[in-house]
Image (cartoon, rainbow, N blue to C red; front, top):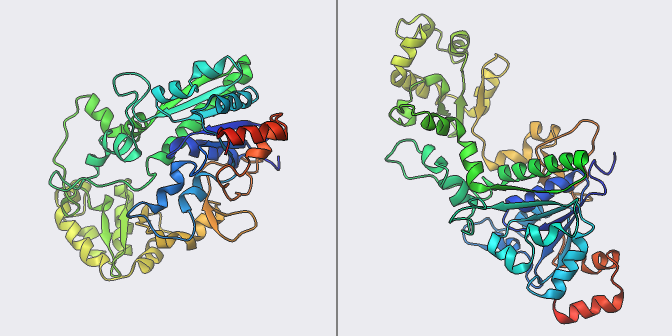
Amino acid sequence: MEKGIFEGLKVLDCASFIAAPAAATVLSDFGADVIKIEPPGMGDPYRNLPNLPGYPTSEHNFAWLLEARNKKSLALDLTRAEAQAVLYKLVAEADVFITNMPPQVREKLGITYDHLAHLNDRLIYASFTGYGEKGEEANKPGFDSNAYWARSGLMDLVRADINTTPARSVAGMGDHPCAMALYGAIVTALYKREKTGKGSHVSSNLMANGVWAGGVLTQARLCGAKFGERRPRERALNAVTNHYQCKDGRWIILSLLNEDRQWPTLARCMGLEHLITDERFATKPGRHARSVELIRIFDEAFATRDLAEWRRILDGNGLVFGVVGILDDIPHDKQMMENEVLVPFENDTMLTINSPIWIDGSKKVQPRKPPGVGEHSDEILRKAGYDETAIQKLKASGAVG
């Protein structure tokens, strides 16, 4: 399957910012033919993200490179009846239609499920919203920073203690996991179609995915669990599931859940063998009761060596730990390269981020650079049966860019 398991699958991406179009990107990675529907002129507003204050400066549109790879662009002004007619013609032959426009906007543009489903009873209509499609907030706009990160409780839960300022999320941090949820819904609907021959409407939203992401503690709250004091790192309840700063300023995090077995090994690796028999720390209850004291000892120990040296010391001993990575690490991460987390664009040395699923025996397409606004409008219209006269007429009317 050199062209991917979704070769021949026709997808219309009528979405923006970020989760819904990213779901289309994952489909494209496995060979789907994705047409990006965007307004003429400036195109999808997401193209402008790197120009907003606070984002890194680059000669490359890094946001668009990631979300719009492999796609073809058709510029349609869906406020015009002529453009809607073009879309309906494409829908009749499509397998998947993806949108994240609020329900009232879909109604205005004539792209609700009811508008499209009767055109193609095999169509998978995938919609994505901030807060769900029912209730008084159904049309409320939302980004992952507010609907996923803040509304779900995650923004509060990652605070070190109740006096710490809530932590901001980074761009797309919630959107990309949400994209995988919408992708899963689409693939599930495709499987249902294989069994029934019929398409269906699938949906997901930022709020639901945020609650799912924080599900362990949320479920505890739903069960009426009693929560203890939220403690800062220096006062954590368990020293061997804590993070520590190394000599070079980098951080390392320990995750020793099998503490009884791993504690002696950790102590030896850290040059703290004497703690194994120290009556204060010889038992798990003792270590937990004196966690603040043990954290201070670990802080002093980790501060004596650089992160790279600690990695060499701790690796290969069955200890579960991790590097607190920084972005500068990623382009040189051998493990990421060998596992195709990072892959090059076609005919280029520039790397991009792979979608995080693999299927043995099914090859992904090599990522292709994203399109310009309306770059493929003529090509798509010709394939849809429009002749040159009709194409020029649509352009002259402003329906097509």
